[in-house]
Figure 1 (cartoon, rainbow, N blue to C red):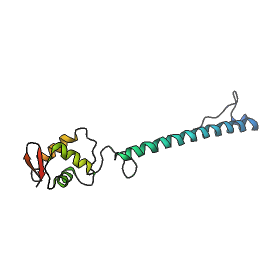
Figure 2 (figure 1 turned 60 degrees about the vertical axis):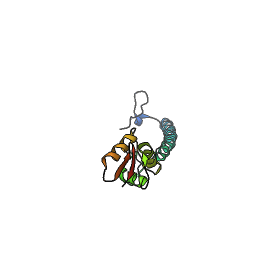
Figure 3 (figure 1 turned 120 degrees about the horizontal axis):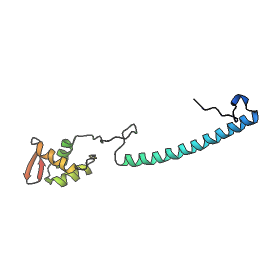
Figure 4 (figure 1 turned 180 degrees about the vertical axis):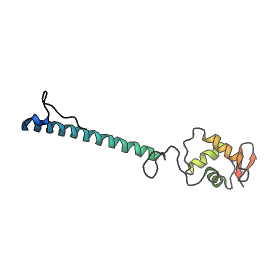
Length: 134
């Protein structure tokens, strides 16, 4: 509920027309200040949204997403990258990211390594740290 402006100990009902007009002007000035502030903040937010979108951290609706969505899961992406190639874990990690796989994991190389070890039906260990797809 809005706070009523008082003239010393009176209410809006006891204010003169000139005082009411002065109060309206004061409030309109406050509205303009808030509108300008809102516009500056919206511009700043738009800049941040562009930065987030550039790293794949925005959903289609524009909301911030913690975990990026990929068209394929990691195993399928790795299989595609490793088809007819033998790569080290580090090379496979870099190749799958260059191919468009998005991740926010700090330890993504370890996750790739675990996937290569775990998925024996999809990947073949050629030598120590070297893998290919079957």
